[in-house]
Length: 290
Ligand code: A3P
Image (tube, rainbow, N blue to C red; front, side, top):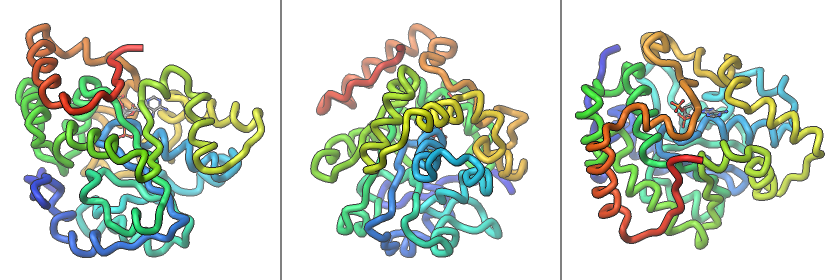
């Protein structure tokens, strides 16, 4: 396996296996009971996947230990190079109601999700921490293009040239549709601030009702520390030739505000100016600290 350049689908840079299999991904039709978890990469996808799985299994972590996150809620889009099975292959083997994960921007989500009124949870993370997390991820994710220097990487992020395209378009696309399409729009920072409150939001959205004791247990099992030590959640089942976690761990820091350790003052000012331009048409309440 080597690092691969990205291939565009409708102007969005994606991994080449996604572009190659685009017609079958676009044709995928979910069941109305299926749940979609969507994010821009590194916004807290795995965290929400783990919460959802535990909620749906009444807090029974033995069930969640039977398979890694990647199999319990497969990627809608083809993810890894063959012969590793694609997300679609995995999905077709599981009966609804399924949990399906995607990083696709809203315009590339197959129409069946909207026609069948599937529930959709979207998680967003403030841009500065998001790009830091993505930078470290791309250093260890050996099938993505080489991240280059931090300076270069930041530029690519601002220009929407990283895998899955523009963060700005991604968070805005789901935000603008959230009422019309009944999307539960969540923030990483809210989950850090008060995990219990946010777990309850997900519980209500899924029309579930669990006891306080079970919610306490889920808060515990989905803490950063518990997930970092859980081989079914920390991506240690992905081969080292794809994710080399000796370079940077998948469960890296899990904090809000880590960007302050990387952005220079000049970079931060330049980023903020550009941010104001790119986000001028919306008012999404992102926080870069809590
Ligand atoms: P960092 O790189 O900042 O540590 P995704 O699952 O979308 O790829 O996101 C991964 C990011 O979410 C990583 O961020 C990871 O540490 C963080 N994360 C995962 N589980 C978490 C948890 N339970 N609590 C806090 N952060 C978590």
